[in-house]
Length: 189
Image (cartoon, rainbow, N blue to C red; front, side, top):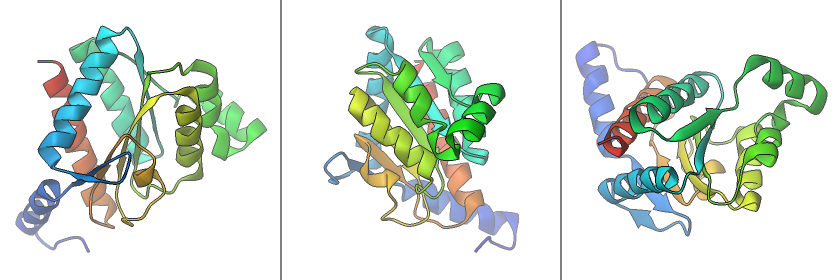
């Protein structure tokens, strides 16, 4: 439930930010510090290896990954691309079904050791899950950001998985944005 006052909202948000859960590809818990450090290193390694970061999200999460792409390219110098360019997105949705809109470009552009980062409040979106499966088949390293149900599908599919324990969009999306800002800023230093 959304808090009634801005002070209560910020208090709850602060609590949630500090309670973000991180797991590795085996489901083992990591500290937030360790997960963040490993993610930053993955971003730096991606740049060093001349690989790229591929990003996917729906709705508000799409806006978040677009911002991450901007920060990775401009501030960090990492090649990054989002799959939200409208003509291609709508062509794929119309011709192949909305579930394919991330899977299709992953199959076309992903290469082994690229980094695939997904942001999904629910972690359950079919197109995100299909994109994650395609990225795994291509040999990509994977980072997921999710919320809502702790057993969401995305949360178990990454090499590193960040989970915000809330079912309120405002909290989950704001936490994802703050986390993304931290990671890209740290990777640019």
